[in-house]
Amino acid sequence: MFYGNNMTLLRVMGFETELITKAVSSTLGAGASAAKSILSSQAQKQAARNAKAVSDHNQEFITSKANIIGEETTENSLRMRQEANRKMGEARTDAGSSSVVTDGSIAMRDIDLATRLETEILDSMRSGFNQANNLKQEGRTRKMTDQARINGYKTNAGSTLLSGVDTTVSQTSDASLGWYKYYDALSKREQGK
Image: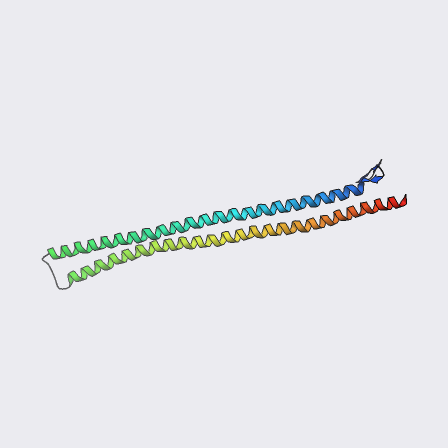
């Protein structure tokens, strides 16, 4: 038996195990590297699928919420119009029951009241629809941001896989060289006999 600096050379049945150890080690390293790259790539692909599912769910939720706000705004405007009609009717009834009618004052009062009520209705509708549109825009923005993140996961998955292939090819070359050296030494030994 001979013990060297970093490698142990053992003569077992006439073979130097240093060459076998290097070849086996390189082969196992290449296989482990390939497996690691594949598993990491699959994990990143799964992360992309999960992120997409969450993004789709969030988009559905935001769209649904915006639609509800839009429907409520429409319903509120209808109620406000009914209330405005009621107030206009009351104002006309009050004016009709009053014996004080001056030229044009009732018509001006009706116009002022109608304008004020219509402005309130339009302001309320504008506010509700703006809120719904802003929510939809927020949803679209989130969707684009999520899509960029999902694309990042996919890119990383592909990059990891390619990097793993590169490393595996390199390690496979080392393993092939190791096996070549082993068989070359074995062939020379047999020719020397």
